[in-house]
Length: 136
Ligand code: HEC
Picture (cartoon, rainbow, N blue to C red):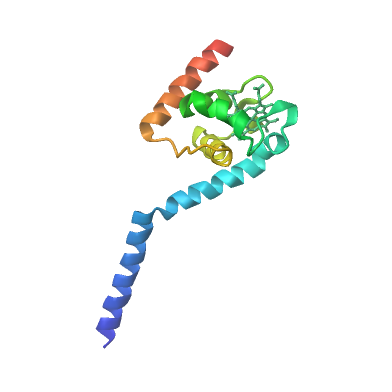
């Protein structure tokens, strides 16, 4: 009897792990931490639109940015634009973390951006270094 119980529990555990893998619970976690970073860092300005920051949920303001594309907007926001401080003022934010928070805002404002793939991340980093050179 015991051996069957063991086999049952082991199969059950594998099925659970497999479904996490297939159905992408990790992407749900991504979404959550984007919301978390947004609240911690970006909401100070983007919640109420301080100094003309595009507001969370403002489809007109975000629509223009969305049409410029994820690579450009992620890179420019990361480096800083006019009153938008580099990395939203949090110096130790990685490109991936910045991108998660940005995607959270974009997706609440009419867009549909997903975590950048490896190749998109390379393009973002390239654009960041071009942009930094132009600023210096
Ligand atoms: C201190 C206030 C402040 C904080 C904090 C802040 N922003 Fe901004 N952000 C702005 C302002 C102001 C603008 C508009 C800049 C302009 O167009 O003049 C802006 C614009 C942007 C843009 C558009 C850039 C472009 O190319 O026009 C992005 C993307 C952005 N913010 C992302 C973020 C993210 C993601 C965070 C959090 C990690 C964040 N911001 C935190 C003030 C802030």
